[in-house]
Length: 202
Ligand code: HEC
Image (cartoon, rainbow, N blue to C red; front, side):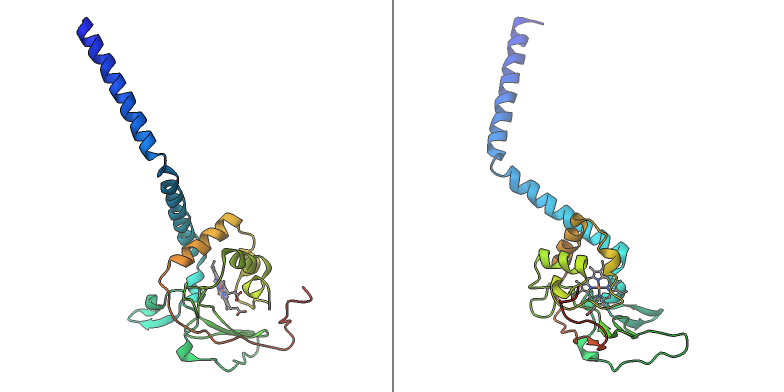
């Protein structure tokens, strides 16, 4: 190697090193937010995956009749029992039949009374808008409305979902915050008197 090229190589290394230092110094302010944003995006993706695998939509998105039979009405994705249908009077299944589901697959009648799948979209007044992450995790873990009051009635499978990790429940919550809000006021449950509706007697 000639003296010249050795010198050039040395200068080149110095330049690269200084550029790297400058680049790193320039990035030091933004690096944290960028990775925090990436982590948040990953969490939403994980939540989307979980919601699609677990099938929250099967009960929380109304079915409509399509050309090939019933299909989820994606314009009302995860918005719960349609308010236009209103409260339904209790079905009376007979013989070996114990419970019934509405054609929308969002209302269910059984020994517990009549329950309506909740609006899980971030709509402020009718969905999970005011719910905090903590309320959501507590609701699934304890089977209590908003994590604190009446029992969450069947067929909401919280006794199974409560086995999920905190990280997964938070991911589901993060994804639910990201779906389009749909204004849909789901009717109140009509619980039978034998079902404990209070937060006491846990
Ligand atoms: C088999 C049907 C079914 C499935 C599947 C289902 N839910 Fe539900 N869910 C319901 C019903 C019905 C209610 C209303 C129960 C009530 O009002 O007591 C409900 C209520 C809820 C509530 C409101 C609880 C409260 O405190 O008022 C949340 C939150 C919820 N579901 C989240 C989910 C999530 C997230 C998934 C998927 C991981 C899911 N559900 C899957 C039927 C279902």
